[in-house]
Length: 116
Image 1 (cartoon, rainbow, N blue to C red):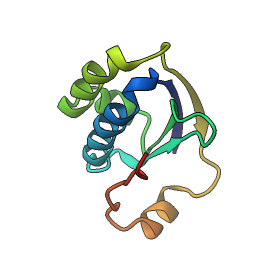
Image 2 (tube, rainbow, N blue to C red):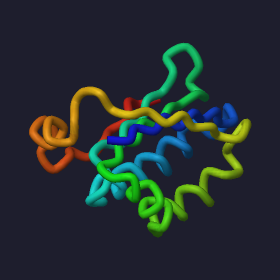
Image 3 (cartoon, rainbow, N blue to C red):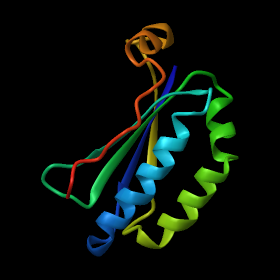
């Protein structure tokens, strides 16, 4: 699996709106056949910083994800919220593999964010 960490820093007044938009995108994203996981994590000591952890089943899945309506809506909604351009780092998953992820995450529960 390809795992992408997308690093995001939002403007201080945009945290709640960013969370809401990103949660909507994540909920739709986990329904895509090419996405094994879509996690949203918020930095404990700086609530304006997030990492989106996107696990893709195939090399083509990231491009397919970027063609979806929910991704386009998210991208356009959060663009003015960014304090700086988002960056990403790509990883090859060592463990779990796709089969283990499917066994542990039966039809992917919808992600939830803690209250800010």
